[in-house]
Image 1 (cartoon, protein in one colour):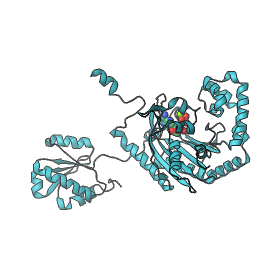
Image 2: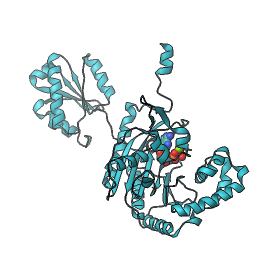
Image 3: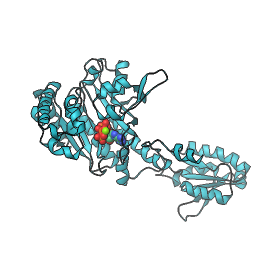
Image 4: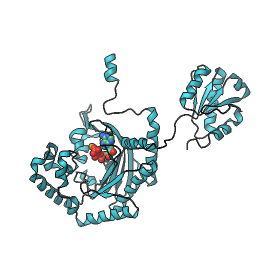
Length: 432
Ligand code: ATP
Ligand code: MG
């Protein structure tokens, strides 16, 4: 048993329990993000955690970190190869195509939930982590690109997060990128001896991804490489100028990073990342861009698309270090009951109070205990008041309200005015 406990009573490496002490911060983060996306008219879509492996291979690309080494892939009992989703865009496009959501209509969609990647766990990098993803379909103009940026900026503002900076770039159209790709490959081939193993492999399959390398030894080579902006076609340059003008008009600061890429052919034009220097190496909190080629690449009618994903663990870490004022989830009132009659009346009275005082969080002491031990629990619950009922109070139709967080006197209140008194005492503290 000891060995079982040591080995099996451990969550899988890189997969975290989110404990009760943390869930109110998570809920606050999720609620805030949900409010923001809803304010922009986005609808939630809920997608399965498992998809056929082929979907991710085709949509994320064979020559990517995710598909090459990060996916949780297994054969199910029918022998079908399935994969725990490493990201949401593939499933979202799959669902849209399967259900005909892209026929002659625009879509603004969002989703939230766990993603799975077999990476080396470290601060800000886990094997199960959570994203909010936002995707839009059917809109080719730079206005939707800009609106998505406004939406993310509003998220940081609502969360009270300062210090995230925006990097943007344009990948151009496929044709322009093909030209750039040739120039890049020529350059890298001329410096083949300086390439690391990953980059050598990618040179023929996915050379743009080399720009994304985090290997310090590669940085000098990358810095001197041909630059994407010098290869932009006219259409993309116009789109990018329009995008920048909209950001300027809204007063959003950004930096153009010519080396910011997404490696795959169906990405085009705008790409962006929000980066913070407060999280060490894992500083990207949000990344996205335009992927006008993906829907067609997966078998649908060509449909412009733009989306991004944000990492909730990293946002939460920022939120905690920013000392954000998080909403409480302790009960307001802990009901102390003594005796059978008080238990019977107390459970019902508690429900009456919950009905009468919207937003009230009330916990009833269950399964007995002395007054002393019940008050100990009341104190530990974090409640502001204990509400005490014994047999005498049942007969008198009263209850005793005892403040737990200050030295104010306790008061005896009759049931008929209890809800009103509780409402007054807790005004400003109730939910909603
Ligand atoms: P990185 O370069 O950090 O590996 P990525 O390009 O793989 O990031 P995306 O696929 O663009 O990341 O995912 C969007 C966001 O999701 C990231 O910016 C990050 O905030 C978050 N994220 C990605 N992978 C992880 C992970 N393993 N653990 C926690 N958060 C993650
Ligand atoms: Mg990654």
